[in-house]
Amino acid sequence: MIEAVNVSKYFDKIKAVDQVTATIKEGNVFGLVGTNGAGKSTFIRMLAGILKPDGGTIKIDGMEVYENIKAKELFYYISDDQYFFSNATPEELKKYYQVIYSNFDSDRFNTLMKQFELDRKRKINTFSKGMKKQLSVICGICANTKYIFCDETFDGLDPVMRQAVKSIFAKEISERNMTPIIASHNLRELEDICDHVGLLHKGGILLSKDLFDMKLSIHKIQCVFQKEVDIKQVFEGIELIKIDKRGNLYTITARGNCEEITKRIEQTKPIFSEVLPLTLEEIFISETEVVGYDIKKLIL
Ligand SMILES: Nc1ncnc2c1ncn2[C@@H]1O[C@H](COP(=O)(O)OP(=O)(O)OP(=O)(O)O)[C@@H](O)[C@H]1O
Image (cartoon, rainbow, N blue to C red):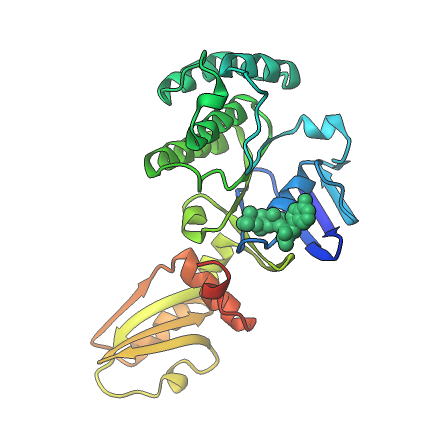
């Protein structure tokens, strides 16, 4: 488990990360979203022990991470800025990581390099940005660490590669409980992979939610009533987040028990009613509106 408690980081007068508290459980996929400058990279760099927090504590499996080799053996960090040894080839990089990570899987590395059509003997500095990202992902997977920190890793890949990487991640998560922490600008990117999403804004966590809980507690219902009804009366005692009416079709976003919401609608004997799944984006829009923010200005 990774535990960050009241973590802050300042660069002169800039509050890059401001009192962030987050718990990342094993086997979960933790997404970190936020606009440019929200503090995502700084937070991940502190998780990786590259930056020392000015306040608060970060513990990985109970160990402080800063300047602690034992804690650092537990994760692989894919940085947003790709850095490789000058003139190194992937083959040389593999040899380096075999020394650093005792469980580095050399055969898997060779197989994945072939699958991704990357030349193991070519100099990395001749690779494109996306190819370097792919190489980092391959190293990260083959390092076989418990945690993997990805700073905008998916954003730099083309759509086909993104799907390929996501499916490799999904396999690692289900087979060996790998725990990824993924920073991204894009909620849609995180939708199909994350269990938990934290929204960073101006250095602070605005919202941190379990997706399963969120999906269970918010519902979108479309319905057409036989006659005009008083929606507030129909849903008395249920929190209505949004009511939209186009022609006769109502789209209602409500928080509460799904069965109770459905029961209330059925009592009106509607012509049509359907409970629809909410996208992660819709959930975040609803949740952040409640706390007084317009998420479209924050991340979309
Ligand atoms: N080394 C640094 N020196 C000074 N200021 C920095 C440094 N690194 C980050 N900052 C500042 O800290 C704030 C948070 O930056 P950070 O890179 O963590 O944001 P981010 O959410 O990752 O942004 P982006 O999505 O643009 O990558 C910004 O205001 C940035 O200018």
